[in-house]
Amino acid sequence: MIQKQITYNEIQAQSALNKLKRKIPYGWDLNIYRGCAHGCKYCYAMYSHDYLGSNGNKFARDIYVKKNIVEELEKELAAPSWQREVINIGGVTDSYQPAEAKYQLMPQILKLLIKYKTPAIISTKSSLVLRDFDLIDELSRLTYINIAATITTVDEEIREKLEPGSASTQERFQVLKEFRKTNASIGLHVMPIIPLLTDDQSNFEQMFTQAKECGVDYVLPGTLYLRGSTRPIFLEFIKQEFPYIYADLIALYAKGGVDKEYKNKLYVLVNRLRDKYNLSSSYMKPMREKLKS
Image 1: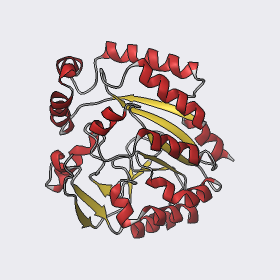
Image 2: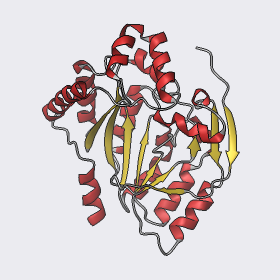
Image 3: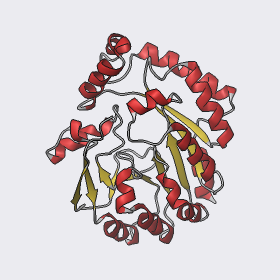
Image 4: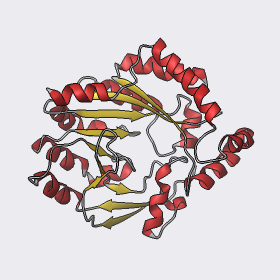
């Protein structure tokens, strides 16, 4: 595989935190980077490059770094109006993507969360999060912190095509095992589930077996959406790499979301298997327990 050149563009953020329209259950989002070198072919956030005069095809190569994010975040957390609400870190792009090894902004952000006792959610496809184990451990003993690994498949051949710049599936499960040693909540995010490619029972059984071994607090599934810039890029990828499912996938995605009948059948299977392995579906439970104590 030819490694594409990554360009880092340093920008100034007007603010660190983005207030979400709906509290789900967190009300704030924090993204250090725009663009992501993990290069996931299905990434819904490709649209965000449109605002920067770039496009979805460059999402994995043009990485924008908010150099002043730490200073802006401290201003916001130090404000008298700040209520120590839960912050979702990296809801748009992975905060532990390769750029983080270079810029090392997350340790500074975690130190601020510790200083201001602010709860957070971190989901990642990278093992780089283990670098900050001690800081996350410290934060977990002060307030709620959730560490989630996003995993789509146990098939490494498929994973390497879908998410070429990410950590292996086994490395991600190892992340969950390590953070089980802290007081953090840990979860498995099975998303996106890609029809006809990662939606077979064997894949779910293997993931849920390992999730159980890791002692996860919950498993959260989610189906693939195909909208905006992502849709043509992903479908072209499928046409090239998995042509045998292309026509059927097109039929399932007449709209942005998958066909309703398919989705209903899928969740019957996922929920049955989750119950089989006695895995919780609620990431709210550990959050409520921690924040009320």
